[in-house]
Amino acid sequence: MAFDYASYDALGLAHLVRRRQISPLELLEEAIARIERHNPKLNAVVYKAYDEARKTALSKLPEGPFKGVPFLIKDISMPVKGWPMTNGSAYLRNYVSPEDGELTRRYRASGVVLVGKTNTPEFGIPGTTEGRHLGICRNPWNPDHSSGGSSGGAAAAVASGMVPMAHGSDGLGSIRIPSAQCGLVGLKPTQYRNPGGPDDRGRAHGFILDHVLTRTVRDSAAMLDCTGYPEDDAPYAPLAKARPYLEEIETPPGRLRIAISTENPLNYTLHPDVQATFDATAKLLENLGHHVFPMKPFGIDWRALYRAQACVSGAMMAASMSDWAAVLGREPAEDDLEPLAWASYRASKALTGEQVGWGLQTLRLLTRKILAHWREFDVLLSPVTITPAPEIGFLDPINLDSKEFNRRQGRVFGFTPTFNMTGQPSMSLPLGQSKTGLPIGMMFTGRYGDEATLFRLAAQLEQVQPWIGRKPKLWN
Image 1 (tube, rainbow, N blue to C red):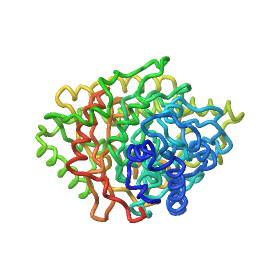
Image 2 (cartoon, rainbow, N blue to C red; image 1 turned 90 degrees about the vertical axis):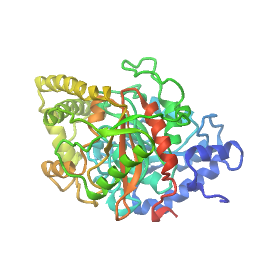
Image 3 (tube, rainbow, N blue to C red; image 1 turned 180 degrees about the vertical axis):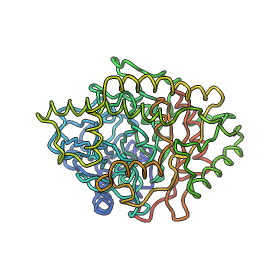
Image 4 (tube, rainbow, N blue to C red; image 1 turned 30 degrees about the horizontal axis):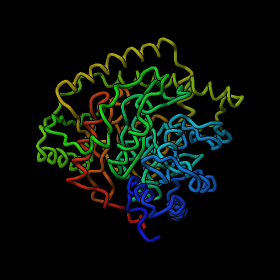
C-alpha cells in the first residue's frame, strides 16, 4: 500500500475512505495481512471471518464515523450472527450465535467491517489470557509476557497494529488491565452505558461493561458516541450525556480536583516502575494546573467487599451455566472446564440464598461509602496494576490451584474491580513504561455517569504527553 496503515487510528482510516483515497477492501486486506503475519506469534485472533468481511467491505457500508475500518469482536458474550461464541471454553466449542447482539448491531452501524474474534480466557475469569481451549495470547511488547485479561486478545491485536481498535469487555478490569499492559487507551464506561441486550442475563448484575480498546482517545470517544445510548427497554439506563464525547475531547477540562491513591485491598507496595509512573503522572497533572492531593483512605472493609462481590458474581455464574445447560442439553462435566472455571462453577453452585442476599446488601452499603468520596474531588488517579505485565505462566489458570492462582493475581491486580461494583466510568491511559520496555497504565475514575470529564482530561494528557508514536518492535 502507498501509506502506513497501522500509523493511523480508526477515525484517520475512515477519513481516507470518505475521501476515496483508499477503499474498505484495501484496508481489510492490509488488516488480514497483519493478522497473518503477527498472529502465529501472538495468538490474538481465534476466529477469522475473512470471506464474510470481504463481502461486507465490497457492499454498501453505513455512513458511520468508522466506515470501512477493520474491527475485531472479543469471543465472549458478544453474539455475531453465524459466528462461534465459545467464551473461551471447550464447553461451548460448538455453539454458534443465531443473531447479532444489540451492541454488535451498533458496531456495524458505525461502519466497521467485522473481521473475526479475539482470544479470551475461559469465561473471562483470569486477569491473563492463558487458557487450554483458545491457548496463550502473548504481549506484542514482549511475547514472554502476558497481554492481560480478559480482553488480552483484543489488546494484542490493537497493540500490534492488526486493527486500530477492537471490542473488549470489563467485569473486574478486563478492558483496563490489558490496555495498561499493552500500551492502549481502555475505558470501562458507566454501568449500563453500552447496551447488553437483547439478552443481558450474562452481564453479572451490571458488573460487566463492553467498549473498545484503542490507540487514541478520540477513537474511544467516537465509538461511545455511536453505541452509548440506552435501549428503549433498558431498566437501568444511566444519566444521558450532555453532548457528544467527540466535542468533550475538544473542551479544556479546566482546573480539576484530582485525588491520588495507591490504596489496594491487600496493601501491596507498587513495583518501582509503576510507582515512578504514578509519581510522574501526579506531577504532570500538577504542572497542568490541576489541584492534586492525596485521597483519604476508602475506610471500607475490603474483605467484606470482595466476599460480597464473589457471592453475587458466583450466583450470576451459576445462573448463566444453567442457561447454557438448557441450550446445550447438558450440564458441564469436569473435563469440559479448566480447573479455575470448574472450581468457580462448583463454588457458585454451593451458594445459598442467604449468602447471595447478604452479598447484594453488602455491595449496596459499601459502594455508597466509596461513591461518597467523589463529593471531595472530580477524578481519582490510581495505578491500573501493582506490577507491569507478568511473565507467561506466572498466572496459570490451568496448572495452579485456585488458591495459589488468586494469591498471585492479588500481587498483580487490585485497583480495577472496585469500579465495576460502583458502576463508575474508569479509564486506563498509557502514561509510562518499565525499565524493560513494558507499558504501564494509569487509571482515572470519575463520578457515576461522568465520562465527559474523563475524556476531557485524557485528551489533555494525550496532547502534552503523546503515546501514539510508541510501538512494539513486533509492529512492522
